[in-house]
Image (cartoon, rainbow, N blue to C red; front, side, top):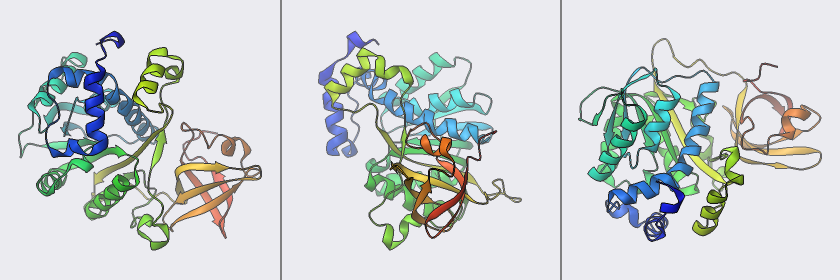
Length: 329
């Protein structure tokens, strides 16, 4: 597949189906060519979001449990390929499930091309699952599919779930978080294990979303620039919602992070301070970060590549101490 092979009739049909909600009405892949066109373009953009999440997980030292990985609702397979590339030593085999056999076959072939020695097969219900990866399925779930997904997650040791960063989808993911919290520890993005602060009535206008950044070379790549213009997509803006879980153990496998919080969405920068929507074990609330507090750190917070998980103390909505827990400095 090359840029010269783009078929805009296929791409326009697929994008319209996703935007209109028609994609939820049943299998939308009509041919292997549909999947190839999607995988080369729209799925690659989703892959940049996966890269952002997986990079932060690795920075924090988190590794999924060793064993079989299931890609539930695999589509073209972008999620499993990114996960295998991130943790080749942890994934012993990959199972694929999708309502489209075309998609399963395409995803299997792409993964075999990338990792020919890794066993790849169709998922057999009841088989062992170490980690389940889920990508962009929430708005396609009917009651039966949601029940099936619930049972699948309940059989897994870890979950890595990525969705669009819209308010409706983010709200659905929060509901899943609360449903699964009794049995799982929340690894990402939450800096705590308590109930989600977004559920407080005063936060009804907010939603839990984050921003990834594309690879640095994309902005200078004329093919991607032209694609973004033709598709009506801002390639610089990559909003997403995510949820990473690991089954609770005794002793706990995720020690509490004292004093850690997370920035939600985009910080708002002004001359004397940066204002952020902040999540920690106390609440989801607006905090002000005086620039004199940590000038080098605060200066870069409006960049998608900047740290979002921070250690802080605050009083009356003003941060008084601030540091990056992942920094060696």
